[in-house]
Amino acid sequence: DTGVSQNPRHKITKRGQNVTFRCDPISEHNRLYWYRQTLGQGPEFLTYFQNEAQLEKSRLLSDRFSAERPKGSFSTLEIQRTEQGDSAMYLCASSLVGGQTGYEQYFGPGTRLTVT
Amino acid sequence: AQSVSQHNHHVILSEAASLELGCNYSYGGTVNLFWYVQYPGQHLQLLLKYFSGDPLVKGIKGFEAEFIKSKFSFNLRKPSVQWSDTAEYFCAVNSGGGADGLTFGKGTHLIIQP
Image (spheres, rainbow over the protein chains, first blue to last red):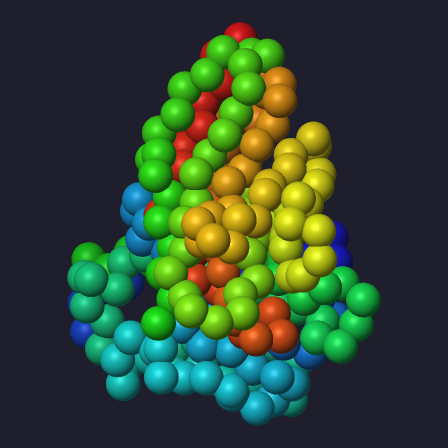
């Protein structure tokens, strides 16, 4: 499968712990996005990268959230000092900007976080 | 700021019925519009998109949508639904060149009864 992959698929953690999620985009895609989805809601945009540059981070939910894409390939999303309200599905998407795909975002399967 | 409103959160139809799912957006500038679908147990995938040109766009699996700028709407339609269309449908919008983060509606859960 050459689509967007995310690891882990499920994460259970205790309140106050730090967690890190990984996203591997489609290999030639230069943009990578992170979203959060809670039950009964659509995905909520958090941040995105053009290669290794983070172009938007004001939508990150708090300063406990951070994301990196150090080499312009995979990305990590870290949540520090998790709270129960952080329980959600975290989605990653990628796109090829400048290509012929019309900027369609391809989504991964998500990482489901449960904070106990 | 952009926002997207989907009017129907749950829709139940019989096979062969016609479908129309409403989507309205709030944004004063140039927008790009999308419909995504999530089948049970699967990833979000793109059904169709509008960037410019013909306001009636056709997507995969017989779906189409019409952009009506004066109504800020982008409703999704299908003339005859199938049981396999059971899924969650999301309308989304972004601005500018179409490569920014998407703003999604809350989604419509569609159930097709055989």
